[in-house]
Length: 370
Image (cartoon, rainbow, N blue to C red):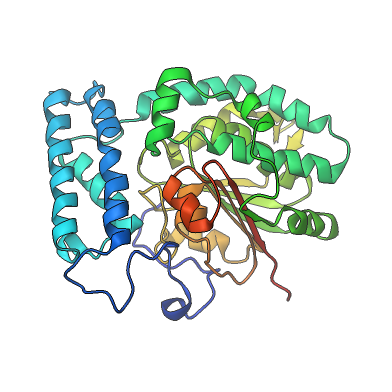
């Protein structure tokens, strides 16, 4: 389902949204801070985004779809660096004060200003292809686990393992460029529990006691993240009779999966038998992919596509996946229904805020008692 209209609030947020919803998790400033002087947190996070510029410039230089890519990449690097300097000098410039949404948006605007629409396209395509070759093997390993709760835990661990494929985190971008990342090895080597936020046992309990009629899953990265992490989890929900909506970005941002790309991936894992669609033997008739209207690696749920708002209105489970959507934004978002926030911590600054460590895991489950 494509997006075509002005943005609207996500209907499952607790109301009134104006007083109960704040998308950004980490406060960069407080009311008592001077509006004309950057806070310590603002300076620290501006530096995080500044450190990402070289890896973005390198990707932009290699974008052969853009004429004079090297020259334009240098201009992007200079311009975004200048904007960060100006925000540090005057936090109210460029639509500030800055938060993670604004810093991401300004970076995307700079890229588009110099003609770059999807600098991670090549690596996304490569990783999607690799992950698709492993999909059947990963699902088979999960299906071989007969005990339902143990299978659920392995599905969640698969989401964490897939979520490490994140080229927006400078350190991971370096690791990936050098060595690649093995999905199955990552599953085995997650940090031991308890994780920094660990509601896995509570979610397991709900899983055994109830089923949901409709789940909305906000997906994150391409490659192993969506193919080997989210799709097996979505398939398990479908097997249990839950209708599943996968909400993906409208426009490219870092290596996040987009709506058209996810449509293509789903078409490759589905098979049609006797007029019905299946994903490795599980009825996929109730799987729907929707354009979220978003164009950033983080998300402000007060602004989603009308199409998503319409199909999600009667959902009873909201799943936010990935550091950008579930941790840096929306960790404390309150919903009218059950919610699950799942992601891996891939910035040292986020780990410090949460009181955990780098590559720690977050699973935050909130059950709404009706």
